[in-house]
Image 1: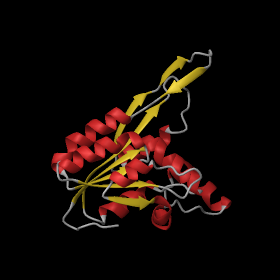
Image 2: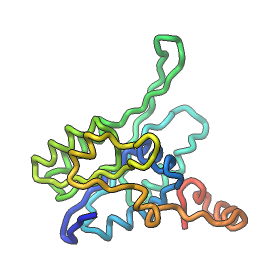
Image 3: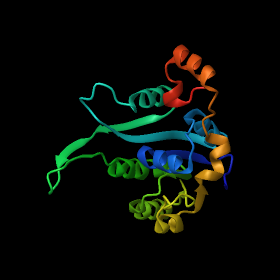
Image 4: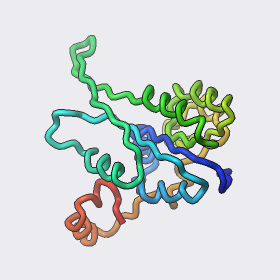
Length: 198
């Protein structure tokens, strides 16, 4: 990882994509450790987290995480999922956040030196190229070590740096305690299982 202390950084996290990549590698992300890691690399201006939320559901498993992130240094960008019926009559849920992420990256490009894109989605290749033309460095954080790889080859090639998520695991993985201890933690703050409070 190549960082300069005086660099202004911004993190853009495609929530579903990062979650899938970490799951494929067999670990959970501790979002406090993730934020601390990159705050130590330069001047972290903003950390955006993008996710779609299923509305009118009594309990959403992602809601505790979203609330925790919102109170702990992340800028949350959410929208409700859309439900539709496909051609074969199956109910599907759609919640793509690509446009929101792309607009925010373009707006923030004038205010930062280095963008950290937590996604492997090849659709972002053109976005990366556009902000690079503005003089901004882009690091893509995803994985090639999962089966299949979670990062599109064209996105990896376009980025100034590719950071392998598995190489960061020791710095950002949630530390799992034994069962007796974690049940105490869950009772005391209610968020341990969802967020990885330490």
